[in-house]
Length: 319
View 1 (cartoon, rainbow, N blue to C red):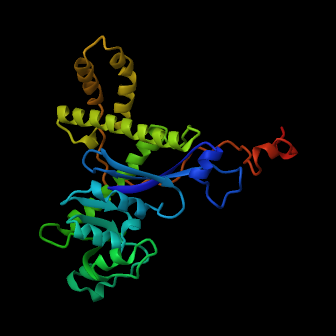
View 2 (cartoon, rainbow, N blue to C red; view 1 turned 90 degrees about the vertical axis):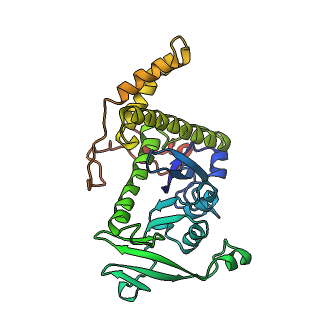
View 3 (cartoon, one colour; view 1 turned 90 degrees about the horizontal axis):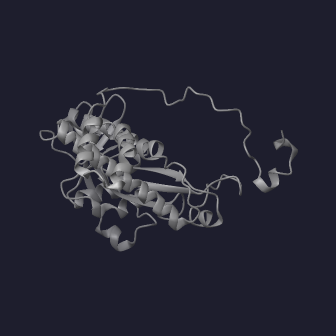
């Protein structure tokens, strides 16, 4: 699975130069924004690769970062992504590498199921996509190597249209592909684990170099927790996704002093941790839908509308 997100860092001159704040914010009122794109396995949640870049600028978008990580994908893999990655050049690159993709249809693409290249059902068919004009980031040689047309399969469900390179209907039935795309939501939960549970949403380092180190240390520890969850799943004969990330994180935090002291065998501590983590099982709640809103109200604190140095002299911020 692939997806992107952003985190913020301290408002220092060095950070602002490398990772500028959004252009819509006034100088002195924003924070450096760092974009992160990840590749995460669906089965275990392990992080395979990550790319870090400024929030805006040339070759800093999610599609550009994904192209940098193509080497982390292997022949026979299936890449899951949202509508942002349903792009002709990404689809063509995946096909040429014998890698398949399952994406939600991009909003700019028009697919008429009455005019399929091959009709597979009332709301399913194969479509021929034609190569668009050369984008600014691609040179002429690379553009000429891209096939002039590719064939993809489109499936219309109640909530979305799914575009995939898995064109064999016998090997990959319609329902299997639809269920697979629904599982893409796991990457949103994985980002919640990384940013909220591990508190990476707001970084603390004051230089770009240390910001990158802070990000990658968070991701390293994330994989450590996932490895502990995988070991627990193996011992308890469960799927890794049925093991609680929060429980594994809290257990590791509780026992890390014993692990560092070295007075007790690490294998004994690991066995105890696995038993504790295994007591909690994540429930299966298919089709669960919750409002994207929070119940708790924030405190009525004034928002800073001027640089802090200037705000100290203004009466509207007093009292």
